[in-house]
Image 1 (cartoon, rainbow, N blue to C red):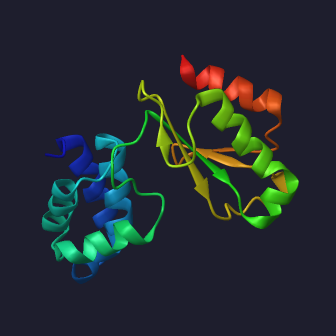
Image 2 (image 1 turned 60 degrees about the vertical axis):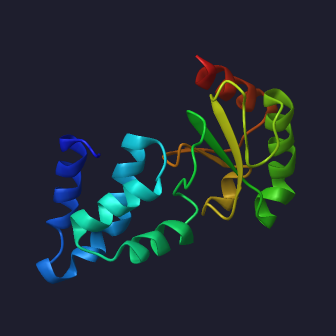
Image 3 (image 1 turned 45 degrees about the horizontal axis):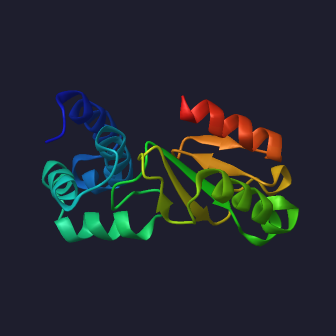
Length: 158
């Protein structure tokens, strides 16, 4: 069950749209639910669907289309490394390998302690800042040298 605070956040999103277009708030509603739960279980997606008044399959279609939604449990810190061509050519592959080596996991892996999940990502719209990565879908990290990667991992490991 989503908390009252989460439902209030969803209500604020719903208020942005006419009553007959409540489904327009589904992406924001899923984001709020994911922040609270850490991932979107089928039960959570069903609850969002019921709350908004949408078919559950429509909510699931949105959640499965966009890669920012976690459809299975992830680590406390989800790091998404851009491996699209501009980032790959500007250090993205190196940055990803540095994290893999430091954490002992591969892409789509989670550390045994549950602190980190590592993912590959497509363009994050910051090609000039390559290599870039996104932490927990909310924090963009740019120009990620080995030193900056090590500092980030140390910070997130606390």
